[in-house]
Image 1 (spheres, helix red, strand yellow):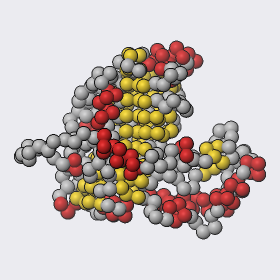
Image 2 (cartoon, rainbow, N blue to C red):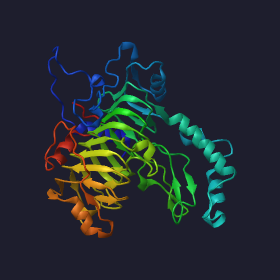
Image 3 (cartoon, rainbow, N blue to C red):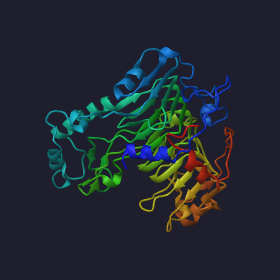
Amino acid sequence: MTMRVALTLLAGCTALALAAPATASARPAPARDTLPARDGWASADGGTTGGAGAGAARTHSVTTWEEFTAALSAGGDGPRVIEVEGVLDATGPGGCAAFEAEGYDFAEYLAAYDPAVWGRDRPVSGEQEELRAASAARQAAAVTAYIPSNTTVVGVGRHAGIVGGSLRIKGADNVVVRNLTLESPLDCFPQWDPTDGERGAWNSEYDSAVVHGSTHVWLDHNTFTDGDHPDSSLPSYYGELYQRHDGELDIVRGADLVTVSWNVFADHDKTLMIGNSDGAGDTDRDKLRVTLHHNLFRDVVERAPRVRFGKVDAYNNHYVVPREGYQYSFGVGAESRLVAEANAVTLPTGVGAGRVLKKWKDAPVTAGHNHVNGRRVDLVAAHNAEFPQDALRSGAGWRPHLRTHVDHPRAVPRLVGHRAGAGRLR
């Protein structure tokens, strides 16, 4: 499904709201919205307002990727609002060919590093790998956009989005991103690593959005999708999938106080990672406090999320599990303290509830009052019964207190189905 078609269908499914008469107490425009009090971890320690206080001179309306990046780099740390109109294409009309370094040739790359020629016991090197890396650097410079502190980025109406861009919230504080359809960027130049696993693997760059070492971040009513290029459309080389996607959202490297609410994450493999390394305790320990609520995870293979270190509160999300290829939803990792409560899970026939949780490292988890196919299920007990060799410990050791309202899990599928995602701001 193309992004344009997806947005049109989304608009058609959204009920039209009756216009209310303007009054002095009318709700501000979405560009001026701030995170409500007690709405997840991003509401702690002063809350999250983004660019709500920006004046006219620091309010930008953009219709191209170039205008967008220029608005982000405009000087000063004061509040700014960037209103995205339509769909911004970060890759540009030249496509991948525009980034190729002179002399790079994918056919030659394949010939040079074929395992039958190169083997599987050493990383690739040489001319074509150097030219691939140079090409990749050109793409990175073109498609990466850094969002500074005190900024709101908001889509206008029901049809706003970004194709091929990677939003980086790095070393920033007080950022809001709302109402955008973000089509996962395609890595034009994945690297072949013969030493990755038993058979090697293609590794790619570019998440749709990354929160890196930043605080007070609110991601709300966005749709993350692979759009025109799902993994099922990608070829294989050397017998392995030519993977051109990375994650949809990563929250890493000391990021803290983040609320992720009312988003759709769809049709993706490695979707949402909180903490990207077991060895990052020095930067991540006592941080990575993230709230996930009222999000739809539809046909997501894994990492929804995978958690290391952080105190993560995941409640009132709906997980619609794919019929093929499913690995897990909640990944329990190093020193994590995950609380997963009042979620709804829709499993296809043949997939057991024990697979919803996966143990990566020993860490306690709270998973109460969740419903699977409409019935209450103890997810920890289900996991331990199905995978006794990887038994999980119950009880994360803390109780979330930053929740505005918890819906009954039976109500979650309909509620989230009607209100989550881009184009559905109220």
